[in-house]
Structures are given as C-alpha cells and as structure tokens.
Length: 249
Image (cartoon, rainbow, N blue to C red):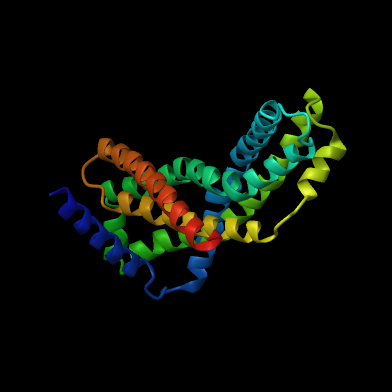
C-alpha cells in the first residue's frame, strides 16, 4: 500500500515538473521573479552559511589535532584534513541539509499558504501557469546561487579552521597553509559544485511539490513544510551516495 502511494506521489511530482518546465509566457516577468528569488533564497542565506561554515572548519581542525597522538605525524596534515573535509563533504552536503531546512520550509510554506488561500486558483483563472510562474524562478535562483554559497562555505570554513588552530596553538600558520596547499586536487571543487546543483534542484522541487499539493488550512501547511524538509534531506543523502560513487570511483 505504501509502495503504491509512493509511486502515485512520484507520478504527481513528474507531472508537476512537466508543468513547471513548460515554455514561459512572459520571459521578462520570469527574469524579474528570478532576481527576487535570488535575493530571498540566496542572499538571505549568506549569514547562516557563513556562521555554520566557520564553526565546522574550527571543529574539524580541533578534532584532527586532538586525534593526532603520534609525534611522527606532521602538523600540516591538520590543514590538509580541514581542506579536504570542507571541499568533499561539509560545504556541499551539510550546507545542503541546512538549506533544505531554511529554504525548503520557506518554499513549502509560501506555496502551501497560496494554495489554501486560493491565490494559486486565481492565477490559473487568469490564464497563468501557476506551477511555472511560482516554481521555475526558485529553481533557477537556487541553481545559480547555491554554488556561490558552497564556494563561500569552503573559503570561510578553511579560514575558521586556521583561526581556531592558531588561537589554540594546535598548529602554526605556516603548517596550516602548507597542509591546505599540499596535494591539492582541483577536481574536488568541481565534484562539490556538481553535488550542490543537484541538491539545489532537489530542495526546490521537492519543497514546492509538497507546498503545491496542500489541502486544508494552516495546520496542513505546517505539516507539508515539515514533510518537505524531511524528504529533501533524505533525497540529498541518497543522491550524495549516488553522486559520490559516480564521480569519485
């Protein structure tokens, strides 16, 4: 029974995507809407991404340092560990999960509220493709801006690791910089950005899907918002596994 419900929901999701990616009626309006979404979903996420990335880099540095008990292991490996952890996993996957909570719940509650207050029905009556008008600009905005947030997280996280490492005395500036520069593989950044774009698409479309199918009142909007965050997080972790196998094997 649950399998049938899941298949039915997947069918609804595909049909919604088909409606979202239909040809826009007025490109200029969509462009204006996309710029607004970049501000709301992207620029307003810079603060939380920065704060969390600093702490992630700092914790990775301290944990690496305190677990290196062998005196023959060079200290520059602390910088290397922080760099690779931020590039490979934390700046894409962990930030993706955080954005699923912040941006995903925002999208689901916004569209859900429009659905229960019949604003979406009003758009349809006016001949506007409501799915495309409301969801497509959000998808474009997050796919454009989330890679920037990921790069910002990488830089700030590595800097946070350096700050706490030097402040606590577990590593010197020169040792940390040597570790950050040691055996650098540029492809790690490409791998992380590919994951970010996929996660941005998942967060936006899954959250919009749950918001779009809300029926009832404000209580159902809250439930849809929670379901959107949970399902977005699950699919981020699933696709993280798939993409890691495909891109790093």
